[in-house]
Amino acid sequence: MTASSTAPAIIWFRDDLRLSDHPALHAAAQTGSPLICLYVLDDESNALRPPRARPMGGASRWWLAQSLRSLQASLNARGQTLVLRRGPAAKIIAGLARDIQASAVHWIESEIESQAAVACDVGAALGEIGVAVRSFPSDLLVKPTRLRNKEGRGLRVFTPFWKRVLSLGDPPQPLPAPKTLKAGPKVASDDLASWNLEPAHPDWAAGLRETWTPGEAAAQNRLRDFLDSGIADYATLRDRPDRDGTSRLSPHLRFGEISPRQVWHAANFATARQPAIASAAGKFLSELGWREFSRHLLFDLPQLSEKNLQPSFDAFPWRKDMKALRAWQRGRTGYPIVDAGMRELWHTGIMHNRVRMVVASFLVKHLLIDWRHGEKWFWDTLVDADPGSNPASWQWVAGSGADAAPYFRVFNPILQGEKFDPDGAYVSKWVPELARLPAKLIHQPWEATPMELAAAGVTLGETYPEPIVDHKAARARALAAYAKTRS
Image (tube, rainbow, N blue to C red; front, side, top):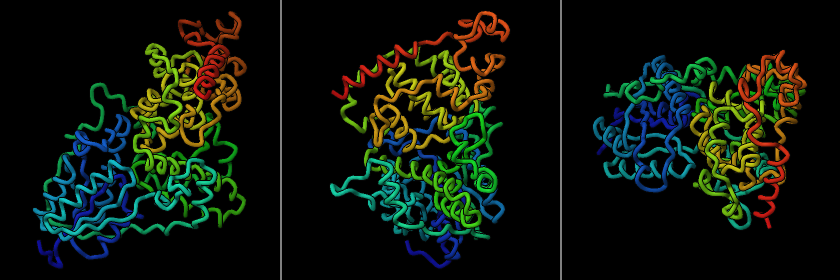
């Protein structure tokens, strides 16, 4: 196929649902070519052969639908539209390129093995019909191949990893969004509703709608508001689930509505204006570093959600207890901070990071249930379910991953609640049946007297469950299991 100067180009959107700091879109717009903006929902390419892609969970599918609508509106404002197609990406993209006699297809690369494999197939299909490929570096701050140890392996301890990233200096400056985009030929598009990304019967997404506004504009507003008014107290409030002390940018980053480069440079710009926030900004950026670290781990171990990073854990004596797993999923363990976190997750699609560590520790150490069960539940219920961060964090808590917490660290859910939710506000919100208990008892209601329980309207075992496991006994059992695994 011979392209003319007026031949259209295709921009293939993937996990980069934004217009600003989008190198592929920016480059295509600068050519002056007519553009077709395309999103492909590909559930098929990796379904029958490795590397297998994980289907999105329910909460992520809901977010994707909203994000696509937001992207469509942004494109409409610039005289463009978003074409939606469903099917194998290579077949869909090559077919469209042939139909419109495209000159090139532009996209941002992915370092995730299954996504890279799909892009390789797309490139091969385009090569067969003579359409040029224009791919651009991924949204990672640093390519994984640039950070290797002497054995050629990626780094597995966060602190030296992050020091290496920082030593490389600032990432490239973010690119502005194109002000106008030349429209290409009209082509058929799927109706988003036909993809059934959003729940209908039952509609369990009411809490997600109450909590979130997906899309690039919302992501930019959230970052700006956080840097203007939230970051100064970040270091002290980030561990308090009863306070609004975090950026809540994670789902926006997951879907590429904002890029790590934008977050990095915005934080540094804010620090230049307010030197007093330098320490807090550094801590904030280190959390961006954990996202980066997890993606690098995923690059080295694509089966991160299935395989222990530490092979010694392959023989760990996990218990099969579906009743206990179900109680954990429903927020009915009898430990208020755990139950509050699990109910917050179900209602909002998010959970405070401190509480994530507590509930994960409870599942794998108090209940001795395989971390993979928890990871799968989070994958389905989190709006920020990231293919790197989710399994890497679960393995970190379990002790089977990189830079893992000491295996003997078993979070005490009572002390964690008392320390990080001292007034009981977080538990009162998400476990309202305990809201009338005084703060000194709300994290351990079984210590209340019958009179105190009655005054609060609590009947243990009826209105709120008894603890499903004794903390001291569970801790001793976990330490014995871990010691046996490590011996």
